[in-house]
Image 1 (spheres, rainbow, N blue to C red):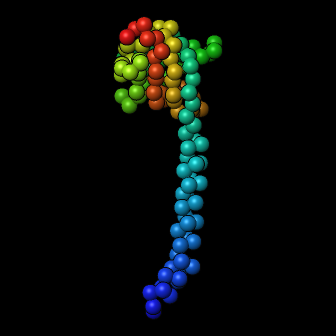
Image 2: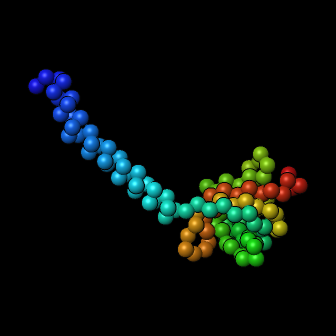
Image 3: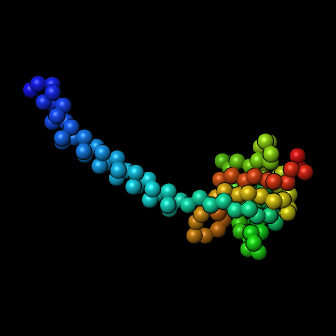
Length: 117
């Protein structure tokens, strides 16, 4: 079979299947990302427990509990800090995975209290 004929056969039969499966994978990825909704809030620290690695914050009158893992990036200005460096009432920006129940898993925390640097 000539090379040109093989190319045409490939383009007609295999390429559309590959394109359709890519679209399907993209749809699955979008569905997975929808399930793992990432939220960002501005809140104030009300309790910090570095033993159990949790952070309780006041968010518009509601108390929200966050789990802080070793993968959670905590920053104050340009400096990376630890959970124990967060003080009560510090203004925080928290990015987290939204879930149906607490504690929410914190992805990153920015402590906006630059007076503590």
